[in-house]
Amino acid sequence: MSRVRRVFAGVNGSPGSLQALRYAAGLARLHDSALIPVLAWIPPGGDLADRRGPSLYLRQVWKDAAWQRLWNTIELALGGIPPGVPVEPLVLRGDAGSVLVRVADSEDDLLVVGAGRRGALGRMTSCRVSRYCLAHATCPVVAVPPPALAQMGRGLRGWAFRHRNLSLDRARLPAGGA
Image (tube, rainbow, N blue to C red):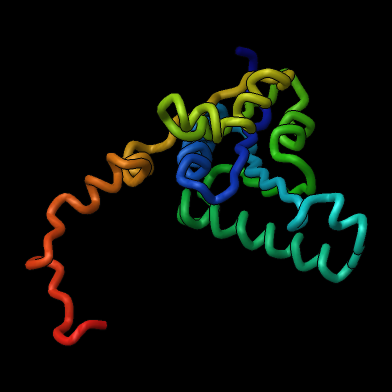
């Protein structure tokens, strides 16, 4: 791979995107590159609903909420702006996959995305953005798997894990019902 000029990280606040942002920050530090966390947003109800009843005020509220979500994600993943790494946060309206592919458009860019859930069912239902980026990006793409702890609470096994020691005696319900 040639010199990496910019490292883009697709974020949305999920555990997988937090892991991807941490990894992207490490790569940006390693390559002495700019870190660009990108959050893509669409209006509630989609673009069609927004076109039917356009409101400049609501669009600004949604955009401000997206910026707040991006700053919260940076804070959760990195504890704030990392020292020694130039960070250029970016919030854009549009579908996440197409937005990420559009902004990371140079051969010396690197795009880091979360790989979504592990397991066959999880991959079929939740990896649309990472699959889109891997298929359509013109720059190298790194798909970072979510942390193991994020996977622990999913599905029936997760339910069994969370409730492994649950019994009526241990539940300590208040006397007389709720």
